[in-house]
Length: 98
Image (cartoon, rainbow, N blue to C red):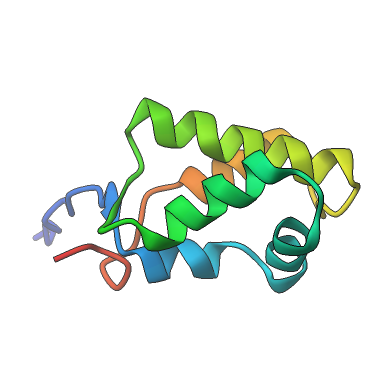
């Protein structure tokens, strides 16, 4: 007899703390000490939001901008496309906003 596993719902709204830990220290320092004021504001908004809705177009655009900046200063460990996908991937149960 096969055991059926309940399909877990995708987590698309995460806590701001969860979003912050998706950025590594080098990325965060590069943004906060860099010269790109737009990237600084976007990161600040991410970290100070009530929650992070990973499906919001404005969020996706902001993350793409941040990753583009990080790529331009050569701190990404993977391609910009892959890094953007990593940052916007489904959340885990532990990352879920209650």
